[in-house]
Length: 185
Ligand code: ADP
Image 1 (cartoon, rainbow, N blue to C red):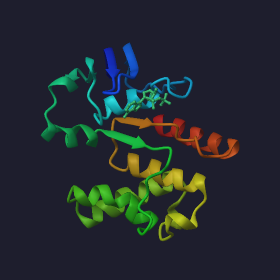
Image 2 (image 1 turned 45 degrees about the horizontal axis):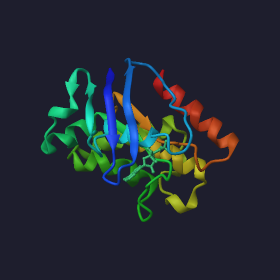
Image 3 (image 1 turned 60 degrees about the vertical axis):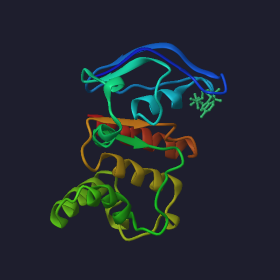
């Protein structure tokens, strides 16, 4: 469960991005945040992923307060959260397989465990056949599916997506939303 409590963020230039936000997201819930550009949606996600600290208020994940989180604990928090970016952030010189396997190699998992998890997740997003391709050989929708595979490969309990369809055409966007919804089931 994610609890956002009286969360405010004012940037150093005086820009108020969030003003006393309260929100609870229960386990298994799939929620959309909708708002005009500049409304603070990305800022809110960055607080949950702890890319930024709030000016006041708090985020609790399963009752664990992010306010108390030390810098050393941030990698552990991030392991429990998958993050899908609008602009993919794929490694251009690595294959589809390696882009997805990358995070697991850092965790020193065995080669067979990595192969099992990566294969499973590439099948789920329908890109198993293209595991040896490079990102530049894929369409935007396929690249986004790799990002989703990368975000969920280690089974995080939370998946955040920041405008995951922002750079895709309507039909591909719909496919990506269906995929995200399927993953949540
Ligand atoms: P959204 O994702 O809804 O488009 P953002 O969270 O990106 O909105 O931005 C919310 C507001 O905070 C905007 O007015 C934006 O200009 C401002 N903002 C975002 N990031 C920064 C930053 N690093 N420094 C200063 N202002 C920022």
